[in-house]
Every structure is written in C-alpha cells, then in structure tokens.
Length: 250
Image 1 (cartoon, one colour):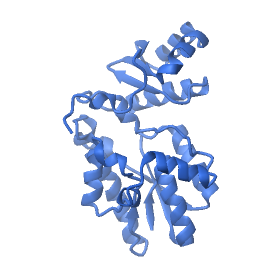
Image 2 (cartoon, rainbow, N blue to C red):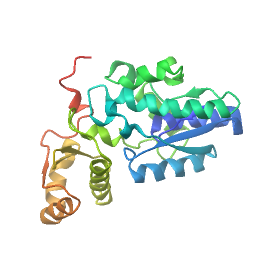
Image 3 (tube, rainbow, N blue to C red):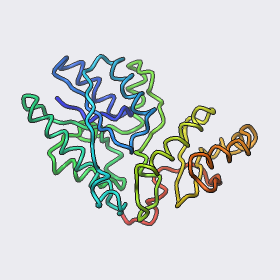
C-alpha cells in the first residue's frame, strides 16, 4: 500500500494505520518540490521514522506545467495530477501497490480541485469514505499518542499566492523563509500571503495583539526586506483558511 503522505495530521493517521495493518508492505511517499516548506519536509521525515513506516520521497515538477505555474483557480488539479503520476510510477514498480491519501470527509465540501485529480487516478480516500472529519482525526491521533495530533494545518506554499499571479520557485522560497522565521519566533500557526512583492501576515485573531506587542517591528521589517519582499503588513481579520477562495463559487 502506498500512502500519499505530506506529514499532515490526516495523511499521518492513514500511514500509521497502514503500517499497523500491513507492516513493511506499507510505504509512505512524500512529493517534494519548492511548494513544500523545508521544515515541513523535515517534520514528515521525522514523523515517518517515529511511526516506523518505510518512507520515500519523490520529486514532482508541477512548476514546469503552465496549468500550475500560471496559477489558475484549478491550480491544485495540475499539482495533484503531477503527484499521482509520480505515485503511479511507484505503484507500477512496487508489486501493484494501491495508493491511498489523507482526504477527509470535511474536505469534500471545500474547494479542492486536487480531489478530482485523485479520483481520476483511482486513489482511495479511506477517511472520506468512512465519513471521518477533521475533528475526529485529531481526537483519534491524540488517543493514539501521536505527538503531532494538534499540528496546525499547512496547505502547500502556493496557496499563499493570489490566483492569477505567477508561481515561481523564488517566490515559494521567500514565503517558506518568512513563515519559518515567524514560527521560530513563537507563532506556530501562520500564513504569509504574497501579493506581488508585498507580504501580508495572517495569524489567529487572538495572537495579533501578542504579535504587535512582543515582536520587534523594525526587526520584522528588516528580515522581510532581506528575503526579497518590499513591504510587510499584518491582516487585521486574522488567519482564515481558504481566504483566497472567497471569490470562487463551489
């Protein structure tokens, strides 16, 4: 069994159960590209080691596809099509391993074009099929003793770029560096939206005042300028998942 494994709470639960039930016949595979933040790649490696599951990385090249890099509203379809093409190759050389992913029941009601790509590739989504929600996944993970049960959701870095603005490896690297710097400064749940060369920081609303009072303003500005942004601001509305999808009719 091959699990499309990002290191997130959802795919980690699927990987852990696959390992428990199948032993070494379970293989967790992480797609690696500039859209995966380096610190998240490291976390995925560490979690796989903790679970004891075999772990493989595969390089994906979605940035070479204009259907992804030009950032249309169905960008995620191109991304997942590339990922599942790579996983199909692994399936074919691994004694017919079937592919599972971590899509859950709640995901089905959100704007996620990548789910269509997974369906076309005949990927199974056991959490969705069993109507298991995001909240249930965290509770199950906590009861199983997984240290990452409350790990914040981390969509790919491309989700920080408004639709229609070109995605490049340089831009994704800027976002990764900015978010990792904020995390190291104590703000573990964060998004840095990149609109042109302007960075907009999103934090949970209850942390905005803490951010303004505790983090040195000039130090923050200097860091963001040093990695290529020309300005930095904070979103007073706070962090809201899928904010860039507001103008899309699901």
